Length: 259
Image (cartoon, rainbow, N blue to C red; front, top):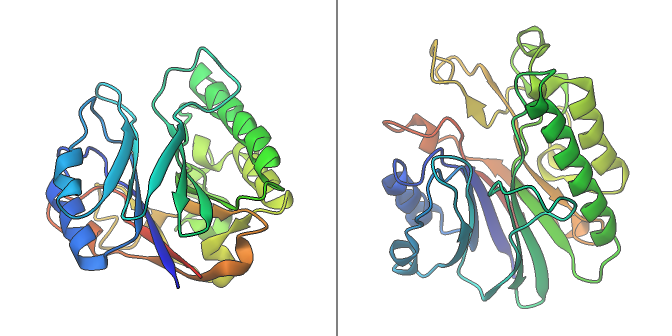
């Protein structure tokens, strides 16, 4: 038995509802992680009609994350530990019955721009909090997969032109070092584990200057697998089809297959 889990920053679920439904009907993932919902209301009933249970946390105009699942799903928490003052809707942790238990976590990591501001400090602190949580999960008997928009360009190979990103929060040494610290703990970047040298494999393209048509993008949407889960990795795919549609999100889905 295999399970397919997808992640997608939809850049407004209201604006991209038709795209989301079409993707689910075409690809039929068992689980779909959504980020940047941009609203308090979530259209759970429309997804229910396709056979997906859902858990979501929204925020007016910004952020917001959700997990859809054909399998039984249990909400654990929608708060990342480490800060009682953080009210951003960026995190959902669930347990899904596959039929063995699997911890599925959806994140929308802070963008952090501009560098040198409180927004960048918040990004780094958020990553530190996530690292602490990942350390706790590392040896947990329940395997864990973390997916979502990490807002991190891990390496030079993950962008079209590194020189264009030198001053961006997504590419700063402090940002990349924290992502590498996650990998150093034993977590696996699903895409890079299977395609260590592949270039021009991106998940985000700006709306301007024909970035998508010219494939001038970045890879910032990731799946990280805990040490216990990594051996079950079968496939990881970037599906560019939704990005080529009319009025798309600036991100495109990533799908991972686990046995």
